[in-house]
Length: 208
Image (cartoon, rainbow, N blue to C red):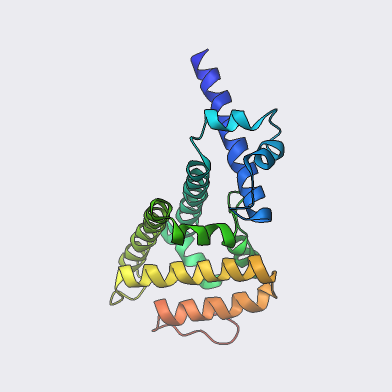
């Protein structure tokens, strides 16, 4: 029975997190109210939220941590094995669109900017981002060991550049709309090949 109860609590918590992200995206962190989040989550009263989260700051911190946990899983799927890493050199529009599509825990740019003004939240965001970059650095080292990336590249700096490239593409897609993804994919894969594998510069069609 305890296991079933724990499952129910986890589902309710996740329901609140997804609803909070939705309201934060639409309304911004400061304007969004616990009452609006409660309604979006299908709860009878905002008081239910406080059974799971001490306050609004704790709620948004949990949203960000969950968002980045999902990003970490995406990074592992995209770059975590040699055959997966090699896909980025043959990126098509569908893969790029998948990379650029924010997950359902994304609270929006305005809310993330709040982290700059709140030290505790800023520390939580930095920790989450560092976790992603550590995964990317590990993927770059793996690629170097398997002949998929220039062994002379500094892994940490390369991970930071990849992180900022992906984050920039996500922000652009989120706030300006999806562009011509096939065209963007051709440019992106050429850029990545020339940066990560300078000995194998592709032609205009993206093939070595």
